[in-house]
Amino acid sequence: MSGCILALDQGTTSSRAILFGRDGHPLGVAQQEYEQIYPRPSWVEHDPEAIWSSQLKVAQDVIKQTDIDPADIAALGLTNQRETTILWERDTGKPVANAIVWQSRVTSKICSQLKADGHEDLFRDKTGLVIDAYFSGTKIKHLLDTIDGLRERAERGEILFGTVDSFLIWRLTGGRKHVTDYSNASRTLIYNIHTLDWDDELLELLDIPRAMLPEVIDSSGVVAETEPELFGRPIPIAGIAGDQQAATFGQGCFEVGDAKNTYGTGCFMLLNTGSEAVKSEHGLLTTIGWGIDGQVTYCLEGAIFVAGAVVQWLRDGLKMIESAPDIEPLAGEVPDTGGVMFVPAFTGVGAPHWNQGGRGMILGITRGTTQAHIARAALESMAFQTRDVLDAMTIDSGVTLQTLKVDGGASANNLMLQFQADLLGVPVHRPVVQETTALGAAYLAGLAVGFWNDRKDLLTNWALDQEFQPKLGREDADRMYAQWKNAVTRCFDWEE
Ligand code: ADP
Image 1 (cartoon, helix red, strand yellow):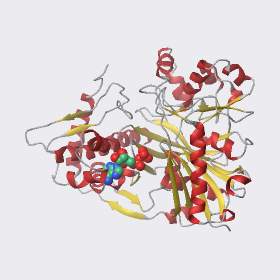
Image 2 (cartoon, protein in one colour; image 1 turned 120 degrees about the vertical axis):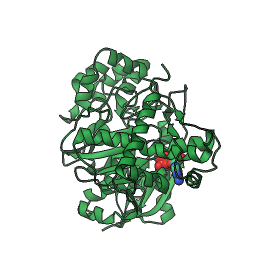
Image 3 (cartoon, helix red, strand yellow; image 1 turned 180 degrees about the vertical axis):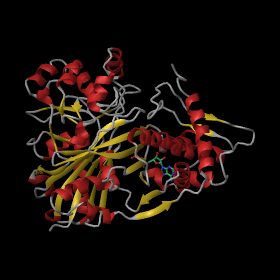
Image 4 (cartoon, protein in one colour; image 1 turned 45 degrees about the vertical axis):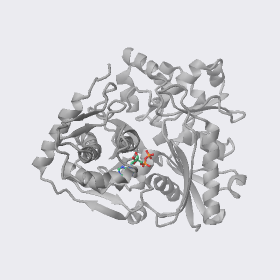
């Protein structure tokens, strides 16, 4: 049996490739950033050729660096920035425009119109999503609407749509496969997560021809082999999942009620709800975690726009610290925030409130307030927002969390995670391997080719780096949380 799995992690700001051994530890990592294109302030694009070339290069680099014989790579798993939309020509494989990135607000007008026309419930019932420029469907419509003759060509089957996974697999297989997996399909706003098919009614509303859509396949299973010349020998592509779903799998959240929270730029919490698609009444998304053998596992998802980004702002905007980790000793200079609350609603408020007009606020400032109090309040804001999402999840799902598994850059912060445990009243677990996104893709691929036997194998790989036990009394925690709820609502609709 060959010795490792190659995971490709195509992210929003960089492409990464990691080789994993059987114990789930990285054997080597290669990473390359690529250009962010901002045609207007709130529009974000990527050059699909840059996505492809950077991803291919890091994959080739990591193999070279580690000196691993490509024959020893048992399979390739792929995870990707979600929702980002690419259209390309079937004949030539050439993109017809830049990729429209998930962050882009270019289709907000289309979304406002769909809401004004009363379609919100229809989309929510079928896709589990809210109508928002975040998702792929309106991005496809925008490209078909604005590029001359494109819709007619798409109807004739000449133009293909894909999220980043789909585009990369097309390229990796030399155009033999036009596919996407369940998890990525569930972020497009045109995929019915109950019937597990593209939805004709939604396609008609957005005027998107079915002929351009990829086949939806399992997240774990051999799709095809890579073109032989890319890595010196064909490698089976055997795992695909969107980044947050991959991290959920990589954290071993296989059972109903298991949840993980990723503290990166923003914060994404996913809760496994098993075979039941739980409809949220409290501002969460219903999404597909993964599909294996045609059976899908659903998740509830809470998306918080600003988490680690608040630390970046203290560093780059206020110049209060030199590097992100400096925030921990600064915040540690004081035992509490001295009554200061920081609501980091820099780009509106996401889950569970969804208030676009919200803007950031620092409240409760007195003559005694210092940088340390503000730093501490900034860290606490990540934990408070997480509690908002978790409380919504508990009500929506009826599941009471036993532990919270965490990852992402800001989860390196012990002070923040201790406060998180205190506030939630459940232990917080940080694993040794923090590359959970790439690891999840590797797991999906490795299971498909028998590199790992089953999920039990994967769970034995999961190792605890540190546990944070709640120490604060529940009354104190609830009192602090009540104050946060008071603070967060005050920022709503600051901008009309
Ligand atoms: P992304 O994948 O969204 O780029 P990462 O998982 O790489 O994010 O995490 C980067 C974020 O974590 C940044 O916003 C940074 O400010 C924050 N961060 C990094 N280290 C720390 C730390 N020690 N304490 C708090 N925040 C941190």
